[in-house]
Amino acid sequence: MSVVMGVLALAIDVGNLRYQEERIQTVADTAAMAGALEVSTCGSTSNCSAMQTAAQSAVVENGLASPTVVTQCGTSSASGVILEVNNGPCALGTKDPNNGNTQYVEAVVTEKQSTFFGALLGLPQMTLAARSEATAGGAGPACIYTLGSSGITGSGSGSIDASSCVIDDNAGITLSGSLSITAQQVKIMGTNTDSGSSSVSPSPTTVTTAATNPLASLSAPTVPSGSCTSVGSSGTISLSPGVLYCGIVLSGSATLDMSSSGTYFIEGITTSGTPTIEGTGVTIYMPTGGITGSGTTNWNLTAPTSGTYDGIALWLPSTNSSGITLSGSSSSTFEGIVLAPDAGLTFSGSTGFTLTTDLIVGNMTFSGTTSIDNYNTVNSSNVLETSGGGGAALAE
Image (cartoon, rainbow, N blue to C red; front, side, top):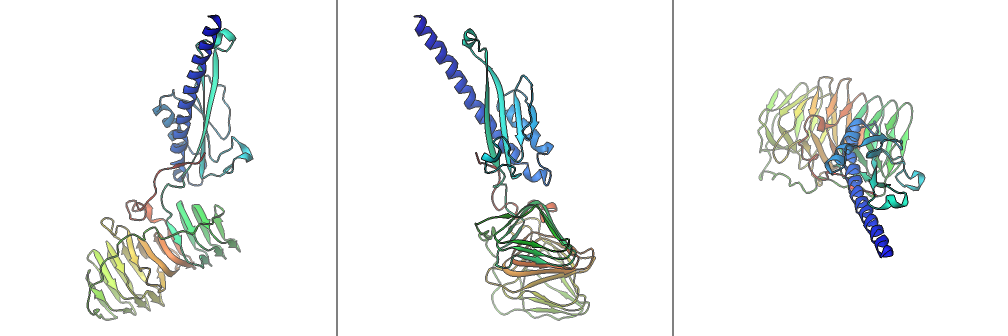
């Protein structure tokens, strides 16, 4: 009977500890995923307070006591629940393929569990620990895609600020002068070459899987049938949505006025001088032709902020590989997504020309003092931001 009772006591303690270990593992999984969801919030600061708070809340919400939080493989002598949050992972050192990668969040949960009969053997408590790792790789789409074979090239003193999102490039990045690119992550299939004081931050990650158009499934508007409508090239040229216009030539100080919100169909725009292109809540759809020319354009164009084409300012379908040149004055305002997956895009402009845009283009060239900011900062409901992804994924 003594032997039977001893085996029974051992089975009860081992079974309970095994159950508690599984429970702690679940908590570690949720803490790692909660932390990974905050990677974009942290930006260039690893293991920020928002990440620690999210992971700590996940522990409490899953039934454990409020933990003592330590970071980056820290230690604690606390007697209760201990949560270690590492961004990037460090608990396994170089044995972990994601060691130090700030796109991954590691959570280690430790808790002391009392035994029922272990005290008879001098083991009144056992320390249980569980480790988990998650990535924000599924946290949503990039905000800049270059899908062609030339990638991103540039010279001058401009900047791309995509610090809250990802740049996905299918070729490589070549910069000279004092250009700068900042992003949450930069993924390239080629190489990164910087000269002068140009820089890419963080250093690009080389990938082997090509990016694809995240809006490929978005249904294009129906181009009006029949012949296109011709318009003049000077003075104020007023257009109406839902009408197909022939290629438009803007010269001198002409103004292309799209005062009503909606979709405008234009077979290309050629500019010279200092014309103005203006419209609010406007999507310009170009079945053929692009935007070319010389001079400096005064842009005052904003995309729709609701509806099927929420956020799209300029759209060239995949059947249109015409080039696009956006050359703006210091007072220009361009807000919206450029969707031109097979077209080359060139930016140039004066000091103060800031584009608030997300890009899905073939290749991109920028020069001068052009600055590019993430469109999501002014319209988080846009079709690119909501096109897919979401959440975090367990990695280990």
